[in-house]
Length: 402
Image (cartoon, one colour):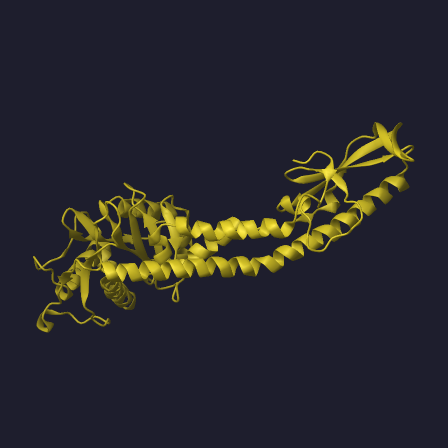
């Protein structure tokens, strides 16, 4: 807080903004690589939100004042300053925004003396003084201060608005460059290749997806990190298979209602194991609980699926807790399949999205081209915040029985 100091005179605003931009770019290097590779757009948005400068807005309609009191007034008498008895009152002007904009000089400025005031966190306080104050003299000083503040804050806000595109461009470029390096490193590091071969066509069940070669591969090398992970193309293929089954369930609501959570889980297990064959054993997908689907490697899971019926945000959070509670590798993939048997499913999907984003282990969300069919999130493990779980949210809308 500045105590009765000069406003808009404590250094250059342009340097302050450049320093903010530099710190935002430097912060890109501190973001976990899983978040950078998962959704660079979300990382960019988050850093911009963290380092943005909020414009200053005064609320002159809500000003208040202190009582009129005695005050020694400084007068300039030739080359010397003199103090004489007078009157004064403080005017408190509420504001929102970055107080730095009240301290620093914008690129446009006046050469005349800067106004003086005290900067509080949510208000600006300045003195109105005179030998014998009148209503007219008080209002004249307030109006003069209002014009000074409006002009100078307007110039500062204009500088910030011109700087914002530079901030976004610089952060997005830094995020993109780091993602390119991480993606390239991941490609080079895919040395340990444990293949998951496809079953013979005679054993396959046709689902509306196109098959791809799929595998488990090592995570990018780092000290103490040799975790395998489900290859990205396999994960996308598995999620498309589940999504295809989910769409089929929507087209057959009576059958889906009869199946319920466990029945749909068992059907998914059957389809997945018919289409994917492991290197060691036939059935690579298995279950441990009532509604889960697991693909394990050694003693941990590289894929976790949960089937749940929508029962409100609290129930969904419990399902997420269960999903994130499994012992996972550093880069585990997951799918949360939620059956919606209520009216206004679009509102339910938005409520589910809000619940996921508010979860304590939520890290990031990717932009979705079909948000009513699939949304993707990056979560952290319940047991280790350094272990990440990519989670696809797949809503299945079942018609309410008439």
